[in-house]
Amino acid sequence: MPAFHRALFFFLAMTVLTVSSVSAEAQAHRRTLNKVSQLIVNSYKHLTHGNDTEAAREDCEKAQAIEEKSKDPFISATVAVCFGDVEDHEENIAAACRHYAEALENFEAVPAKHSARQTIKTHMNVTKGKRLTLSCGA
Image (tube, rainbow, N blue to C red; front, side, top):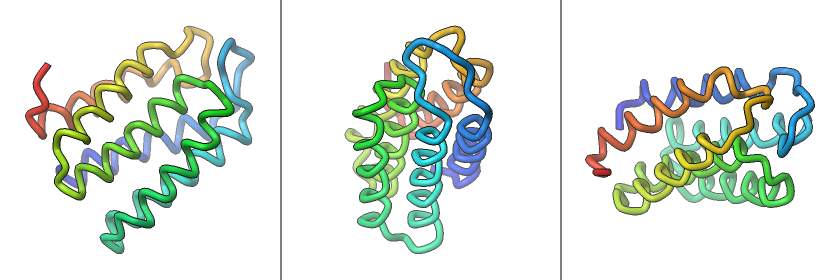
């Protein structure tokens, strides 16, 4: 997977997750969004700078623990992408494809009034590009 696609996704996630939150159904508090964002960025750093998939997966798991309490579909989607990137890095294509498919479903479930809603299309396009690069299929 080209580093550019990963970098683009994490840049977008970081940008959106740090935006002030708007009251919305199923949206996590801003602090929660920031915590998850930092864990995902840390995971990305482990993959790109240290080639440390174990540490990257641990950060994804920490983000997932927060996500399970928040029930925010945007967080669910970004966590799924986090796991997908780890699997992609480990060349476990089938698992990466499953995580990216899950992410797309969660991106589609983000409510209209969610603070991340304006960038959902971009997030979905990046995730679809990852699936295309891996030849995930439909």
